[in-house]
Image: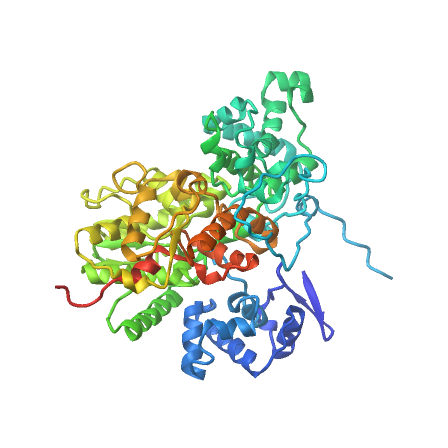
Length: 110
Length: 520
C-alpha cells in the first residue's frame, strides 16, 4: 500500500503505517492525521514528539504507562493521564499516535 | 495512458477481503441466541469476506516457508497433509470419525456471533475433511462428492484462508463432541498446510518473526526492556513507598519468571506485572526475569508448527542454563500456560536442574495462592471494595492445562486467589465458564484489527454473560489470566458499550490488595 502527498509516494503497510521511518516529517504526519480524522494541535504534537524521541533511543514505542508518566513529568497531571491521551487520539494513543508519529505498528498481544 | 491494472496473484485471490470500519457490537440483552439456519437468518458464507492480511514474502522466508504460493500448490498441500497424517495419528482419527451428530454446531462463539454456518465446528472441519476424503480414502477416490469428497482448488483454499482464521482454536466444541474431536488441531493442521505452500497469516507469522529475531512478540530489545522495568520500579516506589524491584537477568535467583511481553508494554497487562513483583517482594523470594526469555507466548502453536514452537521455546531453556534458577514460574498468559504445562517438557525438558519440590513449570496464581494460604503474604480485601469481580476462564488454561495438585485446579486456584483479594465476587452463567468457557473472540492468532468484524462477533457470547452479571450484580471488573484476553477485551468491550477498564488481571487485584512492609 502507499499514499501520495505533495508529489511524493509513501509506502505503507496494510494498515497505513509508514514503512520507511526516515521519510517522516511534520508535513506527512499532518497528512496521516488528516486521513485518521485527527486535527493536529500543539497538544497532539507534544505526544508525537515524545514518541519519536523515545523510538529513536529504544527502537520501540514506549509502554502506555511510561508515556503517561513522562507526559505527566513534562506537562503536568492534566496531560499525564489516559483519558487525556484517548481524547487526543480516539483510536488509542498506542496505535493512532504511533501511526502519525511514523512508528511501526506494535506486534504481539497488545 | 492509464496504467494497466496489475494482474491478481494467487495470494490476492485467496486473501481478498472487505474490512469494515467503525464496528459496533449487537445490543446486549444477556441472552445468547442460536442463529437459525433458514432463509433470512443464517447465510452460508456471509463472513467469507473477512480474511486476515497475508504474511509478506520476507517474513515467510525468515520462518522457512515459501515466500508466496508455490506453482504446484495443490500437490504440495496434499503432500503436506499426508505428512501430517503420518506424524499425528490424532489428526487422521479426527478426520475419520465424525458422525455429523451436530452437537458442536451451536457451541462455537464464532457461529453464534456470525451466524455463518461455515463457522459451525463440523463445517469448519469438513473444509479439510472433504479434501482428506478425496485424496486419502478409497471411497472418496472412487465416489467423489457422493462420498463427501471435494477436489482441492482455489475456491477451497480461499475458504480455508477465511474460516481457519475464524477459529480461535479454543476447543469449546471438543468439550461437547461425543467423540472428542479436537477442531483446534484440525485448524492448526490447515494453517500448517497453508504456510507450507506459501500462504501465511501476517499477524501470527510477523509476531513469531519478532520473537525469533528480537526475543519477544513485541520486538522490545534488551535496552528498552531494562529501561521499561526501571521506570516501573520508580512508579511503584512513588505510589506505594516501597522499593519493589523488577529484576532482569539476575544469575542465581531462585525463581525465573517467564511472562508474556505484553506485561512490559500494554495496559492493563502491566498492572499484573507490578502485582507479581509485589508478591515476590513481600514474600522475600529472590526472583528474576530474563532478557533471553522475555516472552512466555509462543505463536508457533497457532500455526501448528512444531519446529517453530521448539525454536521459540528453546530461548527459555537457554535462560534456565544462564540464570540457574531453582524454580520456573509462568505469568498470566493463556496459550503460554498451555505450552508450558503440556509441551515444555517435550520441547525443552527435562527440567532436572530445578528444585523437584516445586512444580516445573508453576503458574503464578498457584505460587501466590500458596503464599496467601501459608500467611507469607497478606491481602487486604477492602482495597478492592470499589469492585464487584467476576472471572473469565481463558480457553487455553481451561481446556488445555491444570494448576496445582487437584483436578480442576485451573478453575479453583484463580478463583480462590480472586476471592482472597476482594470482598465481592460473582460467577457468570455456568454454561459459559470453566471447561465450557467462551473464548474472548481473539485467541489463536486472531488478535489483529483487520478481522475486527469476526472478533467482535466472536466476543458476543462472553459479552452477553458479562452484561447479565453487570445488570444483576453490578459487576464492574472481569479478572483475566491471559494477555490475549486482556488486549482483546479492552478493545472490544467499548464496541459493546462496556468501558475498557472492566477488563483486568488477577494480579492487578492482588497488587492492589497486598500489604507491603514489615510483617507482624
